[in-house]
Image (cartoon, rainbow, N blue to C red):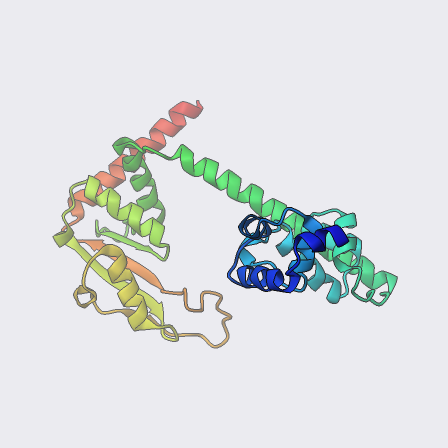
Amino acid sequence: MTEITSKYADFEGLRERAVALRREGLSRRQIRDRLHVDNNDLLNRLLEGEPPPEWTKRPNAKDDLRARARELRVQGLTYDQIQVELGCSKSSISLWVRDLPKPERRDPSEQAKLAARKRWEHELAVRDEERQRVKEAARQQMANMSERELMMAGVALYWAEGTKDKPYDRRESVTFVNSDPGVIQLYLAWLRLLDVVPERLQYRVMIHMTADVEGAEQYWADLVGVDASSFQSTTIKKHNPRTVRKNVGENYRGCLVVRVRQGADLYRRIEGWWSGMVVEAERLNA
């Protein structure tokens, strides 16, 4: 060390320059090159007590995991439980949380319940991932739907959800009611395919009296692309206090009624199309 200090006689002056450069944000390599200090021991002494600038610190990919592991440990989880939660090794967990107090020992039955809950939560996550995968694969199968496919889908949709004539009540009216916005959009696309012009359509909302009537009217008007003032008078359903309704909350917007003016001819064709589809289905199953 005597040889080093003799080479750099003005140690304090050199340290002042090194500290100033460090505080300017220079790295060890930059300071070494700037001051021509080629001895690491001396460089350590010159920079003693001065923290490195933030930009020289390498990010740790496991910082978030470490922080979460410590949170879970404070909450009282064991190494095994933290491993299930985070999916990392117990050796890493041990390093991250070893300075924290050990959780109190739980009653075996309580531990079993907690472990079962964690396993069930994991199972639910796996099931949901599989559910979403199947839905997405099925959605892709519907890509590039042809006009004929839309035609048949619309006929089936109307026969399931639209008004139909009865032998004792022959009206031949084309009226469709549904609460699902996707169903409404598909139905309107089908009407456009049939060249039913927008001017022939009448809209009306049906909703319970306890709901946000004005908000529902505006929602459906935005969906179908018309002004809410063009809607017919909303049908308000009275609430039966003895009935427990589940269709409540901010997402409840009632049903939209779509009626086609002068729809007798269209209704006859719908009935004919449906009858033809039934005949074809029977033929395919024969």
